[in-house]
Length: 176
Image (cartoon, rainbow, N blue to C red; front, side):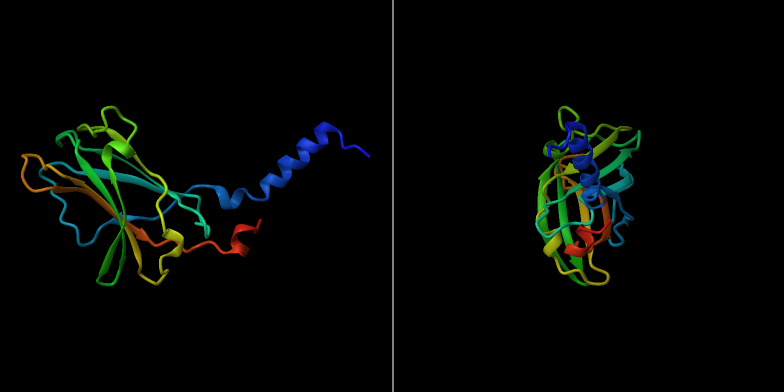
């Protein structure tokens, strides 16, 4: 017996809804880094949202972390910056990945202007699902302006931290 085309499409659509809860982005709670001395005099980025997709992170996922925010009107242009993604637990901090600002921002020419909204898209962050998930373990994302505002020492322009996301288990991935 042949299944009519419309019923087949409906069956595929409804069965795909079964997997949607595990395949969406999730805004997560975050805060400014507690031990970061961010230089407010030279302008700062204000983060408004942090998302991880997919969330929860599956065993084979390399998720995307998206950070949205804005800069103050009196800040300086940020153009040659590096974004550091770190794992922090107690007194141990290890680098997960580094990104160039020009690789993670959609604006042309790859800079953040004063008074501008921005979105940083950190794709394919490796290893989040395999990091030790312990109480008080954190993921730290910082933006460091390599040249600073006067070609001197690099300046920390943004630093946010959030709980290390618990890895998804098979039961979590397939629950409705």
